[in-house]
Image 1: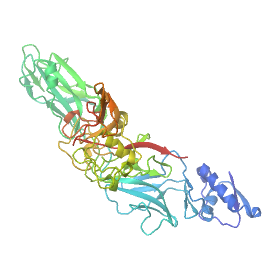
Image 2 (image 1 turned 60 degrees about the vertical axis):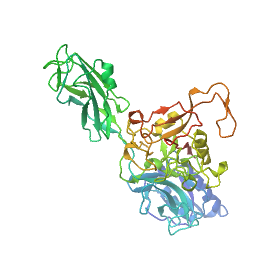
Image 3 (image 1 turned 45 degrees about the horizontal axis):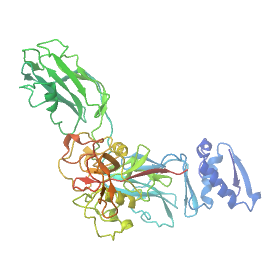
Image 4 (image 1 turned 90 degrees about the vertical axis):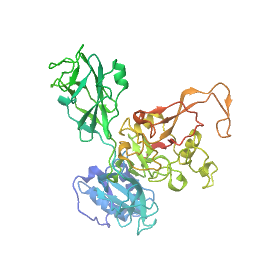
Length: 516
């Protein structure tokens, strides 16, 4: 590729073979146009540069060329221009060009962003400065020591109080996990729950009535014990003793095995929703329970770090006006990291460590919908939740969107009490870094269904008209006392959209915007 270059401008920096391929992108063609336009009045001053060093020379000289104020280019327009290089470090990807203070700044190699002292739960903007540095700052106006005239905001990120949920891999246990000594009454059923912690240790928990035994398998299954804290459920097994013979766990074989008085029946019920790829069976040790290799999730952790899914730039960002406090879910849509707060007009719809908005602590009425910045709703129903999110260019999540944004949380568990504020409890963090997604408060959804009101008009919209056979409004995730019913696919479809409760809050989502 060849370039027309003003011969009187000297290249700076070394020539790097192979950079031609890196810089043959749309933004360079756009830059070339500005370059040609700037020197079009003196065509005799142009020289042709070509070959391996041409691109490096052109990049070095771009700083000499007046740039279009809005110019921002990336090597890959379909991905964010930043890369997380460590828990607290960030870099701008190679191949990024930015117009700053009327001049082009080119970054032919990956360049570190200068970081302030990061504070957990805070959003940061990233700026390109006219001195060629890249700086992160909690100010969304200009970095410390600079102004809007000599810096340009090009993106940002959220510094989370902890890490996102990650899959945990557990190797197969062919020999099996021992059940533990216990004698079950003859001709009765027993049940054993299997769970696994973050270190991969498997625990077998017997049902409370195993010693006396259960008359039917259904009764044994109904007596499923509580899962130990901070573990993922693997599933359970049921055992029917041999006729007229007691069955001693750990001594007598499971059904099909040899040793002692083998059980007449053993049934295996893996919890596929919590442990992906898991199969349970009798181990090579006939009295133990074998498990195949599988993966599972147990939420996140409590080590503060940059949320890689919160990275955004000028051409890769949420479609709403303010990108702060959001995370990209499966490259498809953005979700608020935190539940809605009461004082959202001050803090935005997603803020760490603020009072959660719910039916007992309703949020402020948005100014877009007649609010004065002080008055709060008297309740927090589905209509009001949608109204607040609309104020921010967001919406309530559909059932499918919620299930996706909550993926990775610890399933089938609840926190046990009203959390009160937008805290970071690692147990309830999703893969994308969204907090309190399950087992804390229900969250209003966009969906209607699950039954409808009786025929006739009902004045249930707060004085804004009546509805006729309005379907119920769904909410998702479970709340603090929903115990094992909570989870990423937990939902409730038996509530009027006009209903309000101290156990229901909301979370916003919006579309993903990519500009090329």
